[in-house]
Length: 267
Ligand SMILES: Nc1ncnc2c1ncn2[C@@H]1O[C@H](COP(=O)(O)OP(=O)(O)OP(=O)(O)O)[C@@H](O)[C@H]1O
Ligand SMILES: [Mg+2]
Image (cartoon, rainbow, N blue to C red; front, top):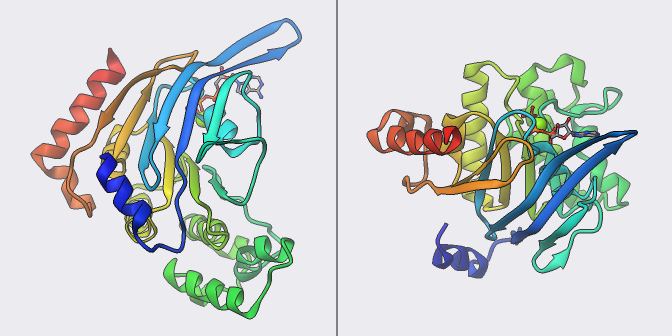
């Protein structure tokens, strides 16, 4: 994303003010008894407020580790992680995290799952309840508000987990291969949903995938990591018009962008 468009987003009167994220020389080595695994080494990345950034790289290159550091679940050994110039020191409601497997409490209904965050923060106002109802409508689960997770399909569980994150109005959404386990049709539906949502809210998104097509369809930029230890190999701009839909994947411009990313990945 260009600086001007990032600025325009910053200045526009949005409710959810997205945050800029900066990684400086981030490194992480896991030490278990005598084994040492350097997962990340000197990773540098500047993510503009409101940007949709995809993180792409081979299995084991440290993508999930990087996301966990951004989420504040684990600490980097070297370097720093900044959100709007403030260091990340732990997890917080300003960052919403979605994993490959949706995490819902099985003993709570869809609505109760969505309201879990506000309830935990003792912020369960009538307005929040109203918002939960609207969110369930948006993700197409209004009819399943009182259903339990085991009564939902895989895609529905993903949407419920999504609503549960969105009610907290995170300034950054961290997504770790969230659609990896879904079938092609459900996955395309979730991608469409995410694009529409981002178009509306302009939350900063860091989206991990190892699918080149998915990264090209979703991202403003794609950061390609090298094999372990992960380093930023290149950051590729995706200059395709927005809003994007799945139909765009057949255009020449799309195929060209995809090829460029694949070349970087294979270098
Ligand atoms: N808690 C941990 N303890 C020890 N080693 C770990 C831990 N978490 C990750 N690693 C190691 O760090 C490296 C990077 O792992 P990570 O899960 O971040 O990769 P990834 O890029 O997300 O891979 P994938 O695409 O398969 O999900 C791997 O070698 C892994 O074994
Ligand atoms: Mg991973």
